[in-house]
Length: 412
Image (cartoon, rainbow, N blue to C red):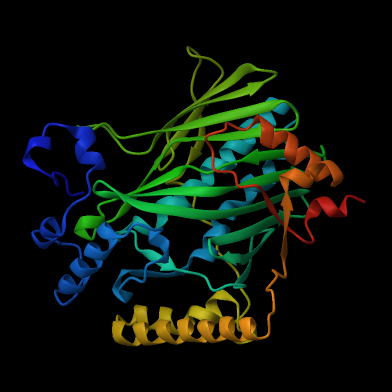
């Protein structure tokens, strides 16, 4: 990570350094060592100049092809199923506090794939494709199936659904990003929520998402650090809070957490460790720590998808396949050409829709407003009750995107 941009009188003020964005002159002086080819150097600097001067949501920017990671952002919804056995296990614990502990274990297991897996083996974080409106993705991971749809384009919102029918567990969620350049990093606020449903107990749990700090952007060696506090609230009067502890300015390690699990407002378990390595739980301050999850020892589940030729034209691998193939070959000219073709196709689709005065609607998900809960189903009413118990600083949106054939609609 590059440190020290800004005027000389701020060199001893860490807060000012963290908040002050670099100037175009600073960018010109950068020594970028993490690009694959020298020919990318100038293009990367020009892109950085656009980024640091941009005042809107950075996710809307078009970046050079060599800075794309070959995945649609829609596919990130599958990280919730990285460890299907742990997803299945959340319904097996007998007591409410132990079910919340199992939920925290599963939640922690999703973080490595979501935020660290793309930065291993000498690789760095890159930008995913912006999904097209209505884009879909389907896969299975063990006994769990995952369904994703891009339900909104302005602002971009991805909805996801994970289900293990045999275990009686499902997850509905949606996420959007608000990103801006802050100091020498990109700060991403994740908007949305997820709701876990346990059929056996007819319980619901609402959870939110951590903030993201993308470090090392200015050297081409980006990686992710998490910040803020995540809250999980259950309809059985349980609650968990997980705080993502920032790395100290000098020394220390990344990715530490500390957390607490409550039942009936009493602390039952404490959480500690590093989400990217090993995390632990304990009954009390002086009790022995037990392993919660070992991210380095547990491989991510394989995504099983239909063959590309059997997918519809709006499924992720069919939409972005030519771009991804060009990126694998490091043929960035072809990648840019294919990406432009997709963008022009979508502009044509939007224009035709406007001319016909058609209003696009998602096919797989529906939006259930919090304000309508009083006239809704028991599931909606529980969601509304959970929403009121969440910390107010979280970006939970005004409702929940829910899969139209969600497990909770099949109670009988």
